[in-house]
Amino acid sequence: MGRVRVAVLCVLTACAFLPIAVQYEPQAGSQRLSGTGSESADSPFPPPRQVKHARRALPAAPKPIFSIPKKFADGHVALSFDIEAETCTPQLLNVLEKHGVRATFFICGTWAKLHRRLLKDIAEAGHEFGNHSSSHRSLPGLDEESLRKELRDLENLVLSETGKSTKPWLRPPYGAVGPASLSVAADEGYDQIILWNVDAKDAARPKRTKDQLLTRLLRARPGSIILMHNLNPAIVGAVDEYLSALKKQGRKAVAVSELLQIQAVAEEREERIRRQKALAALK
Image 1 (cartoon, rainbow, N blue to C red):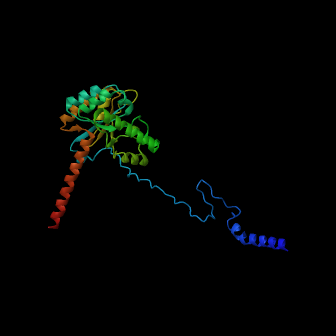
Image 2 (cartoon, rainbow, N blue to C red):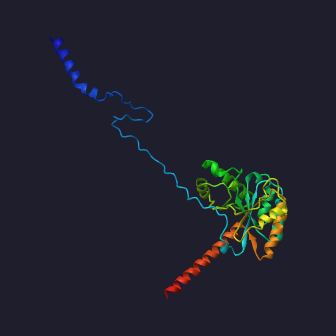
Image 3 (tube, rainbow, N blue to C red):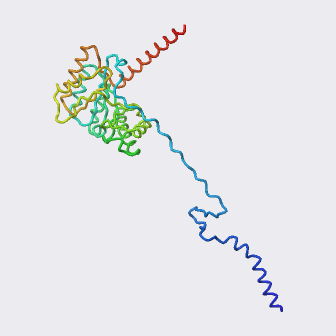
């Protein structure tokens, strides 16, 4: 009988602990905890908090500038050169110095790396720089990282060689623009996207003569931004004669920043006059 009592006692003891064992047995189809941090749907522990890092919003895409209104130009036009492959930059600088004119040089990095002395010459002559990208790739076709690199590499090169920045002026290669690429450019400090409304066509093939180039330059009206390059030596004589013609007309060529400043002053003056008239009408 003693042995029977002991056996019964063991069975009763095991049954007392049975609910505890069942309570922690995984359900069919559930997942066990693992070292990866994943929890089962039946886990008594809450899942780890998911921290989301909000992406900084990019600025709105700036509107490209082709020209300024004639009424604000005061007879001025802007001269701009895309500097991509060397043929006549020293001669262009001589002509601009002869006429006492500043221009905007949109620099391409492939040119600048090979012609650092000329880059310094442009700066020392008092001209201003704009960004024309590092390798002249179409900006809308680049991902954000590549686009930023195109702009930064050129800016860093010009800044290190001349002490001058290319910001805030950008001329996209081929004039190709898109909202996404312009927003990234603005985020990099380029909120003045400078295009043109007069193209000298001096980069065309076959090469055009001086007279053909001059004919196109003479189409510029007050407020125009003129696109030229340093690819065709004939542009040197065309610019020389064009600047002489402007002087006879009592007009002047300036850099892009000067033309935009002329517009800003004229708009401010127009707004001041408008307010004065509005106040006078109330009296």
